[in-house]
Length: 495
Image (tube, rainbow, N blue to C red):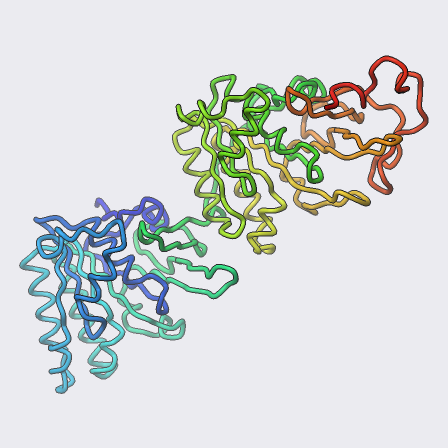
């Protein structure tokens, strides 16, 4: 049987394909969690002149106020009010329920469902019915309602501000085919809303709590990436160029295709410029690229790339490059994962950059979740056959630190850029810390920022502090490194 779409592709995915016609679904949550907005958004997404949506209110806000609150949302269509989406107030029937009998109310809802054949029937709020009848009477009334409305084929959506205790014992939940819980947690600087499917009969739904945002576009949900189970993909045999002159030779003729590569380095070492070079190489090969940035805006990155002769503006215009700027204050792990997942959906994106990982982990403030999240993120990208290039910032001064303690095993390749003391100058060095299942060069090389971006220079022979126990210094000056001789590793390419 074809399921009813909620109008939100990601919510349908979470629900296992949408809502089953004739089913009873309880939408529970505290005030401000988004119950009314979601229910009405589903109404406007599905209602037609032949099969309308009927929205019943009990003793909640007046219809005029309810409609006024909808005018700021993109999904609201005033022309649909009446012909497609009909609001019905049940307050008068409830006031007459002094006899402790909900039968007239139930009969009216069932009659209209059978006569009008609506696609969706919403009752907001069902919990309020508890105030008018006994538990036994409520159980009988709701059983009568749910069984009879099911014959119409309409989805019956019951809303209420239920507590966790009520969700465990309420009659609505024992009768429901589906239970969707919305949450609203206070968290600085931005509160967090969530959605969790507690129950969904005849469907394989995605577990976990999924992030919810309410904007001018309405109710938006972002699936938790940990709830996906990416397919195991055999490693590819090809290699791709890093776009950094001199680096591919150190990595066995390039980066293994569809690998996840981590670039470590302090602020100003050239990580972002390296990212731009990685993307520029992909664009030169006519590949589609996605760049996730938390600090620099899209315009700033385009301008930075232009200084090295890379035309990112044209690539953005023709759709080969997508730059997604996520401000640190608004960063949410599920939103970020959705950006990447949708970017991979059509199978054309082959390179993804995240700049930078350590800042992302800090801003998201979900330390306990982060290892599982990162593992799932890498898995999703690899399953799509794309190559991932990620940066992470290390300490600028003092011994080398490990910003991703216990997580570097998730990356196939780890590249490190560090500062070095060379007499009266500060230079840069680069080395390959690891490559999984691939031979690579283990030496330290001079690293420069030139008109071609980040470049790898000469091999350095005399270094101390290579493992981070002390400041990285080069050793005694040899003739090859003397400033009076031919250009050495620190003179070549310096600006």
